[in-house]
Image (tube, rainbow, N blue to C red; front, side, top):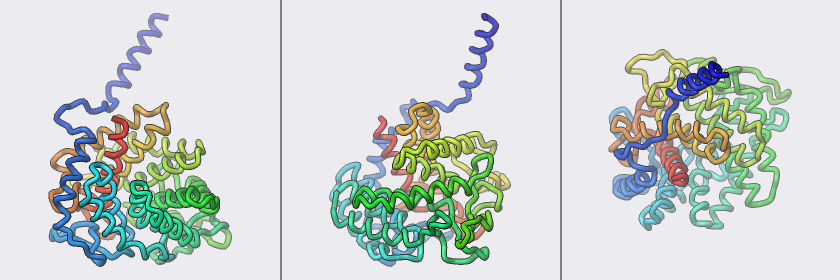
Length: 393
């Protein structure tokens, strides 16, 4: 027995030696301290981003100017949602006024039936506002948006249609990003007791789990369905390196989305999928040491290859949701989330351009836009991750 015990001890020591450790460096701010810093910074930046319903912050252009969008853009909810999250940190009335004003610009999108992104636009803004204020009007807007969204659901396919444009001769395209819009539907069922929203969200997640993933649990970006038969027509990408590659933000959407679905349904299959995606990410040979991924796990690597900080922030937030949902693996989730958040405190990833906190995100590399720039959804999910981490402190 002694040789066996010695071998076992050696194995445990060896396998644990490379495991990421939670941050104990006193020079790294805690999540609560970092949130206070970001809230103060957001207040100072308010005057630099004048209120304008036609100019909602999205990213930086190549020349360093602010890239803004109208409310119809899928990213319009992230800046007001970030302000709501930071208002929850310090209850500063300036942040509340700004959050309410920017959020109001997006209300009309509750009727936009040409997109699946209503969760991004309305739940990340009005949803965050409702969590904090319990404003009944905000709740009504979320329900209306959910009623609009489920009009895009096809029961034969078992999914909500993502896009209406036909870039690849698609009939019924569904993207992995769509997992992030389901949380709004789950909330709508809680608000109304109408189980239709829940059933659509649950079915969409089950269909995505069945058809979007490869044997290694990386995900395709786009699955195109035959809307008449429900059969898969194509598996390809629109923002990744290739049809068979693992687009970094797509893996993050999947991890975060399936963690949410497990929280909302209790279906252990969703937890298993979130675990499997996490294993894929953190065992991938191309994941950099600081765990801020390149824009695609399978893209050619070079010192100049762009990272995607947004993918890292989304991943960290999903991991910190799993800490409470999956106690058996909480140390694994916490250690990797802490490594990401510690990396994002480094100067190389910070942005000093209002209203952004982070830089080095990549929006659509193959299409040549938003490459290695600050992007607002990276900041939104960074703040969300920090809030989840602070709740654990």
